[in-house]
Amino acid sequence: MNEKNRTNPGNRKGHDTLQKQAEGRKPKEKTPLIEVKHLQKVFTVGQMKVKALGEVSFVIQQGEFIALQGASGAGKSTLLQLLGGLEQPSSGSIRISGTKLHGMSEDELARFRKENVGFVFQFFNLIPTLTALENVMVSRMFDPESEVEAAWDYAVELLTRMALEKRMSHRPSELSGGEQQRVAIARALLNRPKLLLADEPTGNVDSGSGKHIMELFKKENRTGTTIILATHNSEIASYANRIMKMKDGRIM
Amino acid sequence: MYFNLLSWIKLHKDKQKKFSVIDYIFRSLTEHKLRTYLTVSGIAVCIALFILFNSLGEGLNDYISGRTSSEHLERYEEMSELLDGWLNVLTSVFVIILVVAVANSMLISISERQRELGTLKAIGITSGQVRKLVFFEAWAITGLAFLIGTLLGIALALGCDQLFTSAGSGGEGLGWFFAPAKITFRTIISAAFISIVAGTLAALYPALRAASLKPAEALRYE
Image (tube, rainbow over the protein chains, first blue to last red):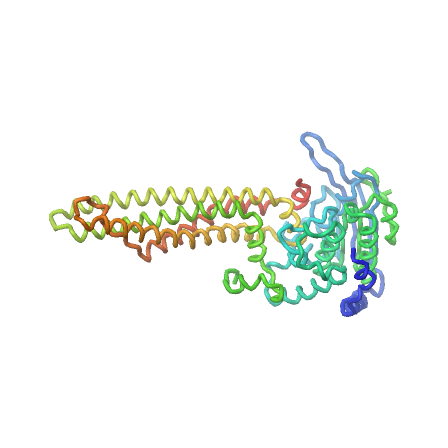
């Protein structure tokens, strides 16, 4: 990690945009962004039915920073995937910004994700053939040229904010774990999502990079982005405003 | 829009602030160079042979028709039909080879990139767009193979023509091999048509398979 870049997130322009974004997006009063009711997810493995999530209900307000904390197999990842519309629930309902996810088609869900949800994965899931900047831009590759140009400027701004301005033309294999995860965060933020879902985002990076990543999440949360982060690490969970402990597919 | 050659070249300059599906496909194809080269060269050879045989066939047809008197017209027509029949068989064989080669390449590419496709879907790429990616990749392979194959086919036809013409300058006793090759616009268009059809047919199943991937399952893929 380049210390100079870290201490000088410097890009004044990026910082100002961040502030403006925060002012524009911060709600006057807390409104529920996510409403989950009696959510259940059962996987069928051969003849067996495995209950990954059982009867979960909760509300998350806009602008919250939530940590889903629990051991491996507690149902954190399944819950994140359900909230992001990557999985369909077996029963129950999820509403995000008033939109009911249940019953939406695959393509409707994909469009919903593009406009509303950013994903950060434990193993980064960057596309190895693309540069850091192209990885950030990848969700816009089918967009018209005029929109791509505007998104390009924002992608550059995001990577600068992540202290990666000198690594934009590097491929993932040429980046450290921490740098790859910051590229993945920039990719997740490109479409200015209301909701950022992060599944063990520090699980595959060293502790220094982990702290830096958590600071970035904290900063992003201050702009009004709702963040839900799954972790088994209580130190990482302590960055959140609210901790939801999970065990055996239930919220404790 | 996607196949504008100039923008395709320009896309690789960061200053252009452009990133499109063409860029993504280009990077994907150049990353797996060996597979791309093998597939493209295999298809190019098929297209080259198609152009060669058709050019020789057209030349032979012309040669025979120019020398056939009215009493031999029926025999000429029989020969011509026989020749067309063989050319059709050859064309079918080439199309099958093309479809199998491209489909195989696309299926390998998709199974290697399951996690990548899952990621794309997770960040908002729709199933229809994933289908487009596969079709564009198949068309890029067959398009490139068509260009190389056409140049190779024309070179082979001209080479054969040169060879047979000079060999036959001593006399005409060696029969139909002295018919000059005739490269027609129709042959080139047919080759282009075959490339597009074969590319489309070959991409059908891989595209449907890629589009039907469930993002959560694809993301779990090791």
